[in-house]
Length: 369
Image (cartoon, rainbow, N blue to C red):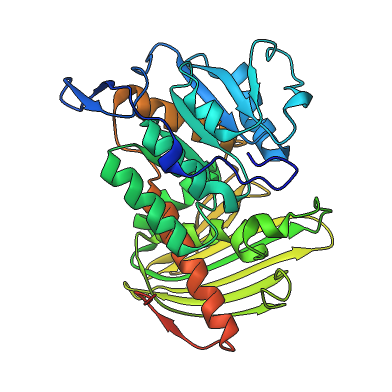
């Protein structure tokens, strides 16, 4: 990551050495040569390099150390490397002060990025040139331009890229998605996501490109529209308060229509008090009501008769995300949440900001520019 003296994460990708050439397995069991890949992934124990060990990154580190025998946390990169990794089992983990050095470490097979998204594009460029699969926390980037560039780089280099849209692994959300046959054709999806206001470190807003709640937490909801309905966005209108870049928004309201005709209404806010996460999905034959914070889900048919009332088990979404990523690397299979998925969520967010800045004017997809 960047040093505290303002040094950017990593350096330009062109400066990264790429002389070595080693083998990578193809889907047919053979091997291909990538000029920048530095070592064959050890599929018995994948060496992981973690960039970012803040509040959220520490969760990744803990899972990698304690819960994933298929992987070994070999190195971390943090803003203050002298702080080390203060958790049991991390004694042998190497600590770097810049992403470039971690990615160059020959014991690191794959890279996990849990930094503010303003740094993601640079880190992605370094990892892609090194030929190392990478998992990047949501949002994939702060702008659609950066997100598209990252996806294109990874695709052209043949490097696997996964976006950590972790809410997809929540058991309540997954249960809701499986209930679509019970409610028939999708007609309306209402999503509410409230997160408590919390004190943030200096420079936090800058890490999100001076954008606020919509990009930081609401991107989960923007991704869920596509994940749950299976439909792409057609048109949206958005209002928010305040308006970036004057200040990061605390609240955002989105009205979106999909290509399939589903009307989506989204409310996102940072609030005083407790978290709330709720969905109401209405179809031609019934409705699903889900609360992923309280772990409750209810299905009602079109006659108003309750057909299901359940309490899904607790979810460990970060662990599930890491597991899915490592399994895809191990089996050389497609990433379960692709870079393209992450890019689409950021594109929808960009459209929301454009609409809000125009006073709630409708924005139609695909968005030009």
